[in-house]
Image (cartoon, rainbow, N blue to C red; front, side):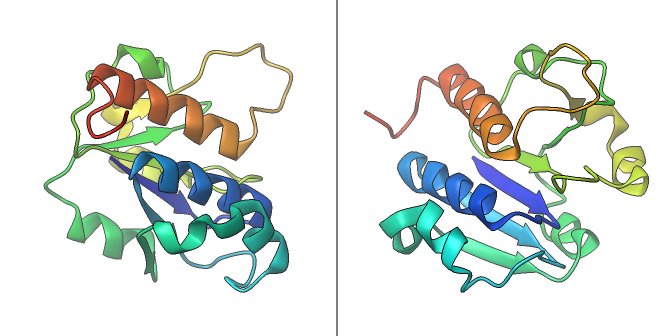
Length: 152
């Protein structure tokens, strides 16, 4: 599995997601611009000593990433989706894409992958779950469907 963060803004969220990636063998992709420095102490603290265990790729923009991963299924997490994340049959090389904490994914990205949009069911309070929590919820469903391959 692979996780993509498009223009993440909060270093602690990225650090927590990196920790989840380290513990699940999931590759992490970061799409610029980033709302923080990769040397940010809050991001490092959130990721603790797991950063060395994560394969991280940094991309200049989403199109560059999408071109490189055109042969993969990309599932885009969005509150605008109608399909729930557990309704997807995930494969081990699928890619989970998450937008920035305050803006989500751009309309242009969502329009390009409308058939692959997924959501986490929740009460509409005008806000959504924390990015790190959302990534963990969806990733673990995908891993569960694949019998937690490679994990013990």
